[in-house]
Image 1: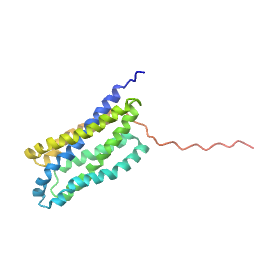
Image 2: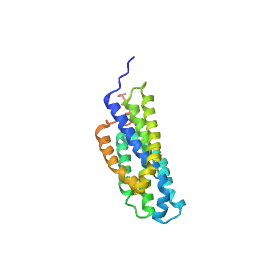
Image 3: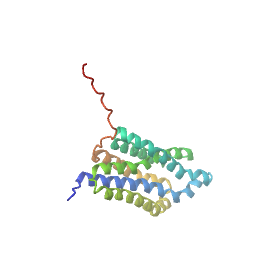
Image 4: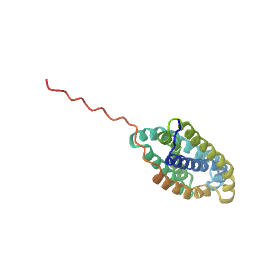
Length: 204
């Protein structure tokens, strides 16, 4: 049996994958920037380390909530909401002049951790059952690719542009991807079961 994968499904998969790469690139690129942040903000390393920790804590908390909301309002709407939060946080983070402002923006960015399960859910609806494991594998591989790119490229970006340039370099791509996700990802119906209509009782 030949299984046909639509162009829309393929396009959506790679667009979501590139968005995940961007999110992970920014997060892992900040690891080599922590030492520079200690000097910039003139604080202890223990406090600066929350730049990474706050992101992960926010992501862990938001994943469950976003998953529930996706059931109610639809996966595409939550995908756009999550990526909008990420885009706003990324665009503003490079302008932070004190650490607590940056931490608040990192919490906002951390909502993007929920991007991966939402993308998997959308791929599940777009791809035939036999092809879904392949689509899921692509999404998860993009997660790993983003981490690897950030670790390698992050040190270069921080060295030549400073920690702020990690955010500045990602902002145009975040805006572009948000627009493309809005225009090209098809609407996915919610999976909330409809309430059963009460049975009409006949006349006695």
